[in-house]
Image (cartoon, rainbow, N blue to C red):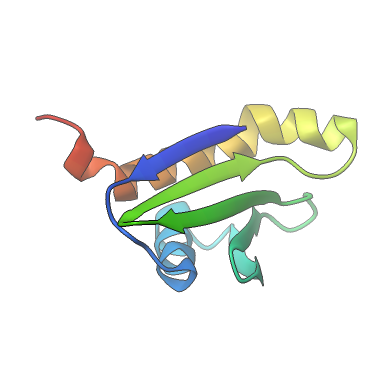
Length: 97
């Protein structure tokens, strides 16, 4: 499981739009519940992004789903891509230039 944190509160809808823009049209980003997104490609079991907001911060946890084989594929291909997109979008202010 990968975790990304930001020092601001972000809505699920904002994260959905941001990931869709950054990952491009090959990826589908859908709301699975009030605080969880599913990110995937057609024919591939999606990864989950669990979003937790608390007192001015937001934490994103990128997790795998499905059978062991699909979890391995997600862990080496899809999850790192989703984590990089989240870091690119939400970690800018925390990273010194």
